[in-house]
Image (cartoon, rainbow, N blue to C red; front, side):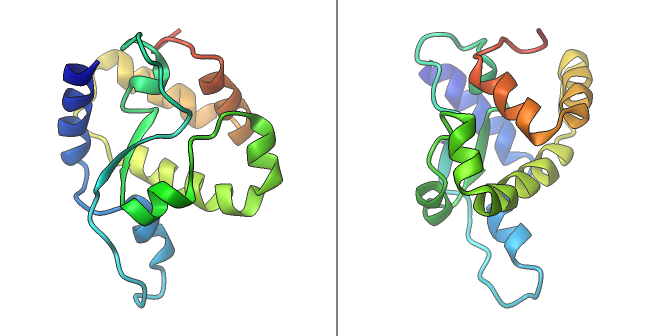
Length: 135
């Protein structure tokens, strides 16, 4: 798993070296945009299966430490509903971040297209089920 996560970190570094949540929140040019310092598991870890969607470039995101602490792994749809405003900001950042990926395999490109068709609730539930990439 460590080798797999290092591979994901390297791929994420090709998108940006700055936190996508900071960038999204920086609409007025006043806030500080911090560098990426954490590999954030959006929906928790898949401890033993590197093919689990949660361990893919779609389930991990490079973010700064303050945002890593502000957005713990989302482990249920109820956590999203309990603070929908906060999570909406996060997922708006996520969609912009995912849209920036250019070094995707053909199957990942098809999968990304599929993700963009999901509502936020469908997207969260898909990841929480622990699907494998492209299934």
